Image (cartoon, rainbow, N blue to C red; front, side, top):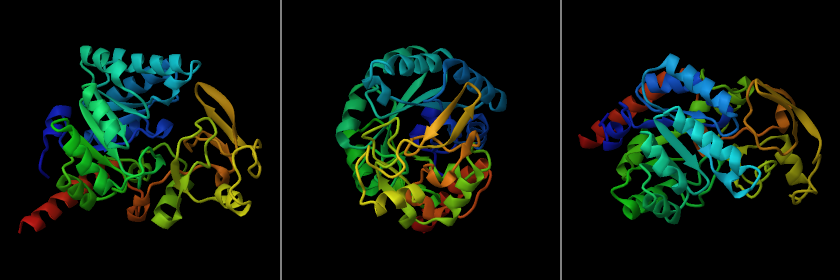
Length: 340
């Protein structure tokens, strides 16, 4: 597996990142990815500062290698939520997390403080315009997210088109590819398109260490790309944010009702369960946007199971470290075969 310049920049062996998919991306997953030579990324976008510190410290107990933390910036647009987002970012910087990975917002106010404390800044984007804005803000790398991705999706462009466009637009800023990648062939293809690495979510949800409900993982293994739905069904708590998830009863009942708008959907306002996290307990309403972790007790068929189109390439649940090594080995074989 060829080392890209990004590997040296991040201090990793393989140009492979795991997505910080909310509370599902905890220290065990992050450490497993980093210990295997990739860059594991914590999901901290819903966590209070004390919990962020606890997870950063636990990660450092499990690995001495670089890792990252993902923070969603969407809340900065709302006066009540903005201080919480800023506090999460400040906590990560204070803890000297090696890399901050942002999404859905403007990273520019946080680049200089992060760099001052030795923290690298990456941001996921869905368009060339976003990529140019990020590069102008002096981020250390840009993740180009294709429309095939799971979870919240800011792109409407296929990855195979977006990556070379972004690479051409912001060179020499390193670019990573995300969306529709689940094996070494996808990694090799991303490198051929000009990316210096990849960021994978769906593949790592289906890992032993991911803090996700077992039925969610089993559904990923059993599903194909046609089983994913792109839209704004699960918009509770995060409106106007398109996303991709597995089709379930909530989606089917909404479609059967003629796809009515928010406020008129079947069962809207009803509670589907509770999320009993260490730092809080809350009721979860139907159509809510949240990560389906073992802390949830309720109706799984009404909860979002985020998944990208790469789900068709996910055929088993296995240790995250094995996933990293397999990705690197397969990519190496593809590149060697092409060279021959």
